[in-house]
Amino acid sequence: MNSPTLSDPRLEVISAARYFYQQGWMVGTAGNLSVRLPDGSFWITASGRSKGELEVGDFVRIYPSGKVEQPSPDLKPSAETAIHQVLYTLFPDATSCYHVHSVEANLVSRFVKGDTLPLPPLEMLKGLGVWEENPDCAMPIFANHSQVSCIADEIKERFTTNLPQLSALLIRDHGVTVWASSCKTARHYIELVEYIFRYMVAAKGVGVWESEKSH
Image (cartoon, rainbow, N blue to C red; front, side, top):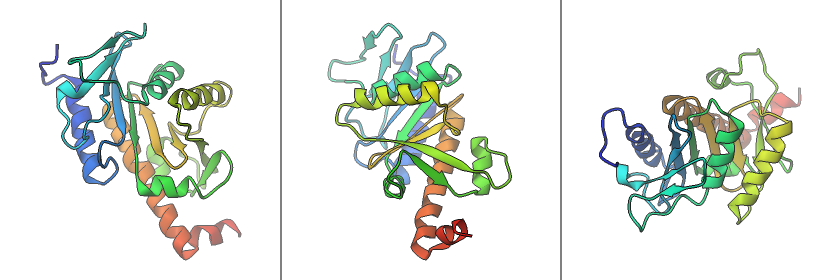
């Protein structure tokens, strides 16, 4: 079951995880990545595994019925499996869900007290599907509960009635999660949102974006 072939989607997830680790976005064992299969099940990184050293045996398979397939008894699903489950349910076209922890993501999550983060109208937003000139765009923010199921419930409740503008969300003081129709696109989304976050942190430091918003 766990012998990889060139078409095994876990290989692409492993490549992305190593890249994110090298960027400092998945230090220690932080973060979690998943890829959905045609039968509706998905592979998700196991809890407590270094994302810079992942192997195909470091994934747990979650089925729509709730069944968990563990390649070895010591593997446990990521603590944030419930978030991946709810996003796959809400967005049937999504086949990949990536969650990383970066310094910038945590900083920008504190730029506002409300539950949405206004984003600067950068060209990079086009890569996230926002093509308007000078777009008024925001990213949803969710509280970081110790019980991850509470976060998943709040995501489900909000997104059921109010779809996000981007395929991305922030968990305050925690990190960013994206979902996409392919592993490649999810990797691009992470790169793009992290670029935007770095810009926001730098701009706030010199008062650039705040000054522009006031005019």
